[in-house]
Length: 468
Image (cartoon, rainbow, N blue to C red; front, side):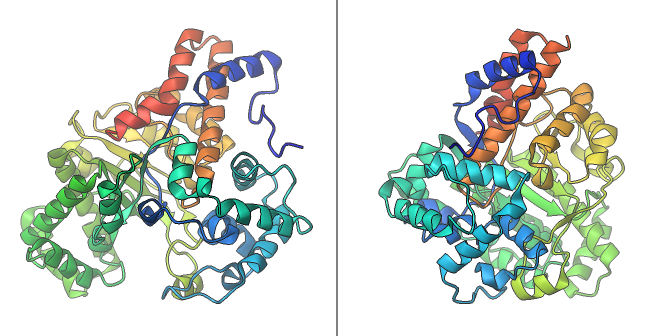
């Protein structure tokens, strides 16, 4: 019994299904471009065996543990580390049994489709995961993980990944990326410059982080000009190590372009620690414009991920830290929020700023019209909570009429769960083919163009947008 339907996500109507299948067959085996994600670069540097099934599928995947937590399961019982990096000494088989016992909670969700795809196509399992099959699953996967064919580099090649980007703090020493670059392995794993800890005054330890940035670059980062220079030098270090992009995770899309005297005074204030929430947001907004200017100079693609209320649960944040499944979408303004930055650099054709959102209401009203006008802007794909068939379908329907396909950048999987990468890309490919088939059969797209678009949406747009 197969866990996944070979025609999953294809339209029900026979002619639409037939055309979707034809489109899909031309691009289903194209290489994977994964330009933004959170896989651990040490996996590829060390190429050690994954520890156990729980560490592979449960512990790092916030899609998995947030669903379980919503039903009363405790994070420590799932082996999720505390904020200080420690964790309760849980037997990985017990973690897996708890996951399997509650696997029914994922019915109908993207997570179940990704997991079933991984179980079937990566590990060759054809029975449904349940409390009864938990140990059988665990033993089978655990045995596979001891095989050299299941090491990270070997899976990377098996998955058909051409390039994958991880995301590192501006303060990271990039030692794992250096080790990958110095190895004789040809897999392309690159870093991405994520400066949040040094541009967000409300980030824990902000002032100390800025001082550390200065120490790493030999600059007096406690002065405004030294601070900017430190970022420029750090970006250059990331670029030399392989980075092609930066990434900025902000609660809002606010940008500012303040006069020199005003930003110097504001910088001194945020460094002192005596600032308001409004001043912190104003500083973050100005730094987005500064980062856009730097991208115009050094060629790094700029990504802005806005609209998430990060770490919504105070309790979970205090006990377990960031990225533990409690980031919640919020409404986000883009038309007025992005204007200061766009006034400064929006008409630059050599600059690429990719905008992501968790607020679907702005797709057709704000983001598609903006990307359909400003040369510097591109739309990122349906992201995070909308990394799903329905989310991708709504995205294409909302933005295509206004900004077309070529002001979007394909797909990225944004994942920490390594085995879900081919599964997520497969969902995107099926979803896009279904949408293209609908356009053809309703007379809005030539069939020959649909086949070219299927290739572009799967491969070329992401590769070109991220300069890979």
